[in-house]
Image (cartoon, rainbow, N blue to C red; front, side):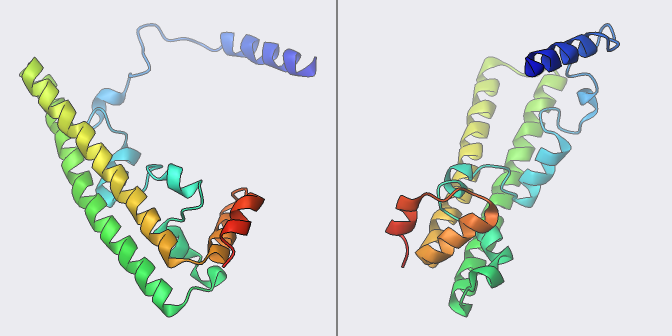
Length: 179
């Protein structure tokens, strides 16, 4: 009953908020350098950041190299593990930055084609198809780094990583990977 009253209160409160006529959820976004990318996305692509591309790995016991390096002391990484993980991270970041720069450039090109009213079906299909392919390659780059990183760690380190990152560890996984 309390939950229902709280929801009704919030709905009523929301309805009292002033509404500006003529504005949309896109209002203000026309000032962006690349209209389809937020400043965080722009920065993320250019810096080679993960941006959630590897959640399928991260949340299924495939640690990411960046976070493994951040937790090196707690995980008691050997010098060899640290060196291997550093190489994986460096290579991933180089590839992700290279692909990210190309992705941002293509988003800017798409934006520009619309701005200049030069877009047609063929160029639209070409740009969007290339953008989709690049996005997939960026995701692959991040996921592959998780796959490689997992091979560097022991089962106990992976379980500890999951614990340190706040993920729920299931007993079956621990039993299968407790070397």
